[in-house]
Length: 101
Image 1 (cartoon, rainbow, N blue to C red):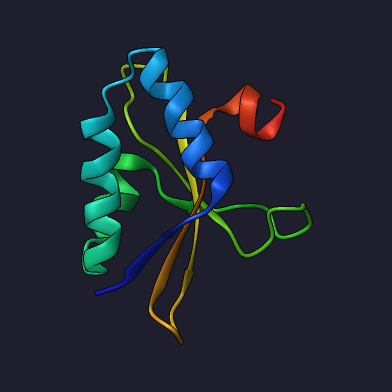
Image 2 (cartoon, rainbow, N blue to C red; image 1 turned 180 degrees about the horizontal axis):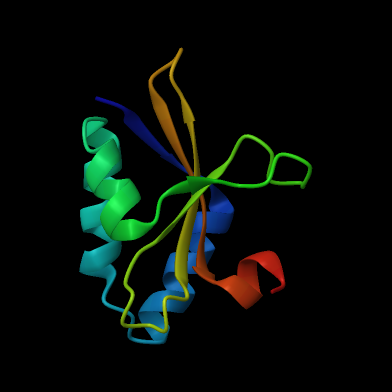
């Protein structure tokens, strides 16, 4: 089990998502799965969890699609420190907002 470390950028993103009426309980569900650390297959299959390209500024980070009803465009970017058992919540939002695509 991991300990959550939401970064200030993530907290700011969540405030914006709440204002836009995103279903934050979907985000909480995904974060709970990540914190347990035992749902890799479910995360990969259901939420398209994958490593971000290693030659980008996001090296070492992972991304998943929280809710596919938002045009498959609602992302969570995170990083796991397996040594210290920390889940670092980095960003959440659309592809365009987070990755410029």
